[in-house]
Structure formats: structure tokens, C-alpha cells
Image (cartoon, rainbow, N blue to C red; front, side, top):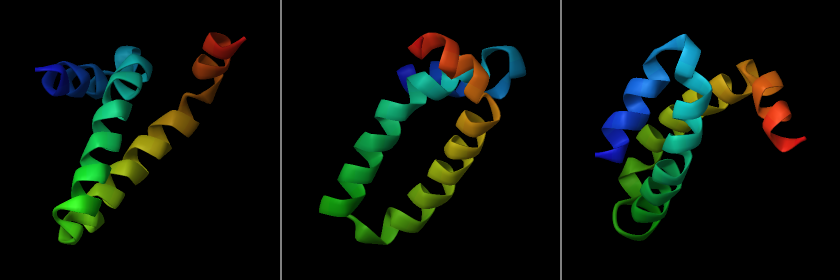
Length: 68
């Protein structure tokens, strides 16, 4: 369920920053699962992770406010 909420937040520009924060632990879980059980899925994970990185760097100013 949280994957759907994170994905919906990720779709809209206004809530994309929050969506990226929600999706991050899910991406880490997918990575660990792929490393242990299904190494052939690493390529798909890498593509999704690159999209996630792009969104994070695009909105870095918003994340910087959270850190300060």
C-alpha cells in the first residue's frame, strides 16, 4: 500500500519530494531482495534508482531545508 501512496506522490510535481522520501526505503528493500534472490533484476532496479536520483538532485533545495 505504501508503494502506491509513494508512487502517487512521486507523480505530481508539488508532492514529488515527499514521494521520493517515501519510495527510498522501498528501493533499498528491492535492491537487497535482488542481490540475495534474483540478481537478474538489478538492471531494472538500477534504472528506477537513476530516476529516483534525478528527482532528488532536481529538488535538492527542498531537501536541504529539511536537513537544516
